[in-house]
Image (tube, rainbow over all chains, first blue to last red):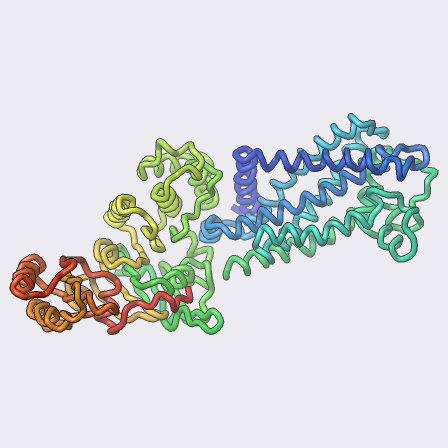
Length: 268
Length: 321
């Protein structure tokens, strides 16, 4: 077997192993799925009055794209925690003593987390529909929106995989990722409109990929009022393209970095 | 006979601790080498280097002629490793664990499944095969782990303390399984803290301490050095120790010294002829006024080996890894 085929096949074997765990410990899934519902309801009802409509678009509709982006980014913590847990257990010695592809454990983990993200997107979309969110562009655009969310989530998964390998303790990874992810999602247009930021903060928001991901989703789902300015920054003018550039950059940097770290930390 | 495992001058440090300080090992094809030593002697470090999980700081090791650093994948294709901590996924069933390992060894799906069923049967796990391994007892988990090491029928097996932490019955079962493997011609490197285990399973034994070999030879060689059974007497009064020592010295083999422990009340002597010697000792104590709490025969332990090889008992506290 060629090494690429080998990597794909081994990666798939590990993916299946991770998915079996979802089946055996469904409690984990319940929390993964309940927390985005909670976020949607909290933000929709708590902030709706304070922030109000964005041009012709109600806050609830404005919010959903942001919640989507926030949830898939948070979901990446799962990758780091799962990997940190694996590294602590004896199973990693089994994997390492086998003539398998060295990236299979990482590929398996990041791939099985796409499944988590698909499930949480479905749950969130349904919750959104219940409180008044609608897809107003075509099905193709909506599909592209979801695909962009999953791609970005996949890239962030590799960042968290790297962190998970650096600090192989589930508790530490949960706290560490919180420190990274909270500012990333809150210094963005996910929950509040861009106009509410000014100065340096506004620049940060404009170039934050979570903002552009959110903006791209709003455009693809048709949840924005074209008359409301999105900012002059190139990133906000081309949100989908800018987000894709980030996805590419993150993968180019963190895939090799994580594979290298896997080899190193497993050799301790 | 070709050597299936060969290690020369292996060295590994963890900061200040020298886990391995120039260890040489050789395991000819179809034989079992027992690596015997206390916790922290360097057994696991040696095993992890040979199994490609760890890089040595110095020295070299080969498995079936393949260098562990130069071609780790080549080595991995030729070994099966079963560690101290059963490397099974607790959420997967026994069957799923073995199937996964088979796939990762490069077996096709059908072949991996067939092999998994076969191994579950062989290790008396067939009935539990479709239950998550979380529900298994410690002994069953170890057997599953060992089965994992055998999935690809590798020519070389490496077992790191396969019975540590098992209850006596599971230990006996494990020994049967291992003996069967050896009977089938596998080459085996086995680490253990139990002299009895090394004696029962290994053709050759290397005793290691502080990362280097302090004795090597067959089990018989080692026994000749260490002696067979021990008579151990526990006195009520410390003051009787001198007289009791004289009684034991009468039966001790080949002028071996009578050992006294820290309390000064437990005396041990290695003997050649266990039961008759015990009878003579009992008679002698009967004729004396020495009060005994306990007296009996016991098999030599790792501590006895260390005592006779180094004059000191094992030092568990100096454990590096």
